[in-house]
Image (cartoon, rainbow, N blue to C red):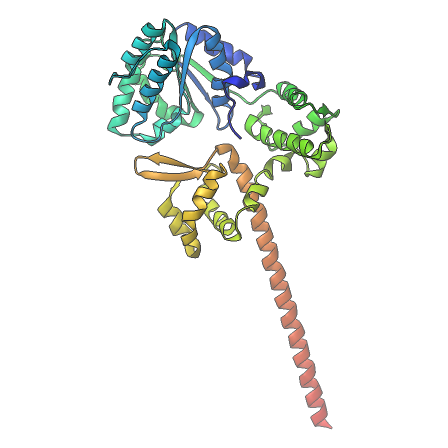
Length: 397
């Protein structure tokens, strides 16, 4: 499941008011912070909502989210310089300038405002915590923030990173003055989303489909709907109808999949079934350290995964790239090396469901084997007892 892009504005539902608020903050020259619970759609909001809105105001938008790695700052500056070159059709280099000066030169060269969207900023806060690199980059951000009228700054991050993000308040006054928190989608907006998605795919929408999908509990979040989890089920349903060439989205298909919750929770069953049996057993084992007790994902080094793998440790090296290729895991470069974690927080309940179901099957098999052994022992005992009785009876004659 990939976030929406700037060309998908028509696919962003239920965020019109938040887009207006972000645009107004940028127009006023304020630093704008967009946050949400995990997988609530910050990247899609910034890409498919805020970016097109700013571009209509004749503003250049440079989005950056490649925070892991020591050279992220130079990558960011080069992306700004590359965008300026593209817009101005002239030579333009970073020239070793820090962020603020580069933005200032870019605005002069193009005659346009340059909005800098620093998305998934929680990765920056996590990957570079307590480093000299972070201290220097924080200072650069503070100086760049002074250009907010000509080069507004927008940050995107998850709510759990807000405490760490607060350190920037020491260098950027009124950091959270324009803070937009994305909430779960309203049910009416999700209903419109279902109808528009069916129309986009040229499928008829059978009456009651939207209500059947919204009746599930997995995607329910507070009084609304979790967009990531809902779209997992919705796309799985739409793709099934397209494969069957039914021409419609039907309630019966939802029922065949076991209901709206199983549409979501069993979405990874097929990709995981494509793994070898050894890799399946290994991933099952590793889920215990990739998912914390509180239900959130947690990262681990390759060595930690190898140590935990036990007798399957030699297969870790081949499993990791396969899971990364399927977008089930991702690798993150942090200060102490490379760590691995579930690719998106929204996948955790889906993987946890797969894990629970597999564990239930394994428990059922063990119980079945125990019953068979017990019956075999009981039958054997009865046969031996009967044989002894026959022998004793015969001798007694």
